[in-house]
Length: 382
Image 1 (cartoon, rainbow, N blue to C red):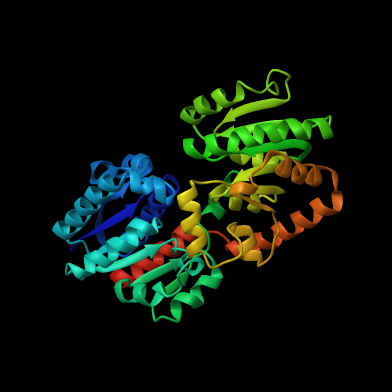
Image 2: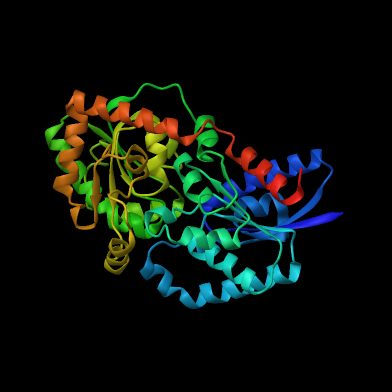
């Protein structure tokens, strides 16, 4: 008997995780002689592997911040209705939701209200513990399986009666594949202003100004800017026009080499997001910087219930890396922190030791395979 599975992923990182998950699930179900066809919403990786059964929507769907979402409210409302209708029409054996909680949790709720009786599995558990743990019992009523990336999340979800598996963080295998045998250049500073244009426009000017200040205090320091794409490079070039660091040979700009730089650099400034956990995994001393619209920040302050925003600090339950948030993102402040990381050996060594301990909380790899096996057991009994 042929089954169908519908997957929803709304970000580029989730697109890659989803593609790896489905590949592992194909293998697991193939060994059990279960035939499944995959459909859904994702990105270029899913489309490349599974063709026109998937819609590539991540370029439009991957927005951050309340203000940015409100600007596209009409578009999101339409896509939500289309996705829901497509799933109900297809009536798949299971729906797999990958991260992207603002959209996916609401989708799961509406599917249940509309009478969908198939299994709903969630991969890469939403971090509701940061802003509303009271949602967990409600999630348990609409979901059949939660797959957690952090071990401490497992108890939180299981207490609600929701079947839960701790699979570890999916980035572990990917980062290990990119690991290089290199020695850090303790006088090389990495600039990671984010992968989205809005982030780069908000953070890179401050990073460049701070770099100029650091260059005065640490004469032999060099800088390297990691940009995620050619589109972001164009934005970065406009910002760099006001700085002489590149023309003086003290700043290099590289596209798509962030993981190499995380292993080369001696310290860095890193925009809040996935990159902070990646940098922590590689043991790179860094300062976290975070700046969004005033409305987004105000709402976040109202709802977030934890003392840190950086996952490294959350996992460590203490301030391992300094967090410069919103109005605190000032050139002189982040420059002073950088000088401290570059010149105070004890400070730097303690941070690297703490980062190594955090790395141990991310699991030993194989998250996609573990998640695939959990889905196969939950949905298909194999």
